[in-house]
Length: 312
Image 1 (cartoon, rainbow, N blue to C red):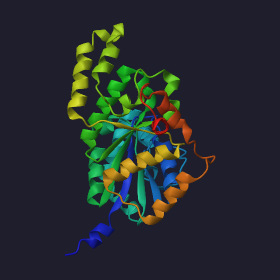
Image 2: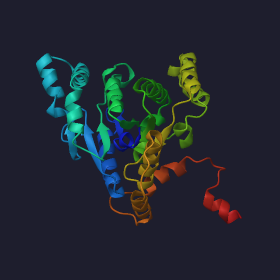
Image 3: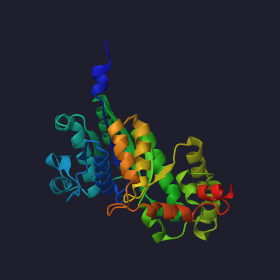
Image 4: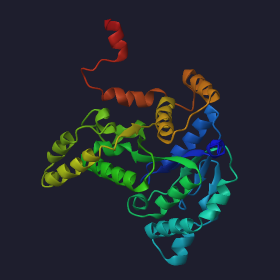
């Protein structure tokens, strides 16, 4: 039997996850606009029952099924318990979601997910929902956003690495970790190492030693050492830097996502991409902002490509 009908029914997309305030909703709006410029038909699915005043055009909204405010008021739950209940309620009513998604054929999907970390590290409802989407022929990549300002604090960065690793193992999807808000990274302090150290998650022993210089964390040196060993032993965590106002930064993230879930774009999208990347700077994007941060943290003795050409 030919597999062409099954292949033609494949639907690709991203599930956008991450802690509260990491920029998930902003990312979905920016990625929706970016993909539209490329000629890719895209819809955004809001799965966060706490989202209000959405800045993007929403094709499916979980608030039609359940809202966090109603759950908290009706069941006298706090925000964390309320979010867990909402996700369990959605899991019990996946036929509602299936009916909504069936209305959108030949689209690329962006799923804006809630921000409670425990939903991805300990709870099973969201993972079960992702697994069901896979059974419905969705080929998804988990895009895990982390605020880049955590790089300025070694203790917080180790915590972020552990959370990212736990999320990758729990969610069980192709995974791309993203350092968001790169244009704001230095507002919380100067980085102790080159930016590549944080994006590629290099030898963490340097970070542990840097952390041990703080008298408060010195007594936790052995614990931090073991946490670093766990992260490096799995060798799974790395990050893609992102500034949503930078075309090249958005393209870098999109290429990583498309590679992870197997999406292959057509000739029209490639031509649109080339036209966009070669266009003059517009009001919507800032080409140099992310590059400027990157250049501040290159190794002092490492020459740029232009310098190497000039030497020749």
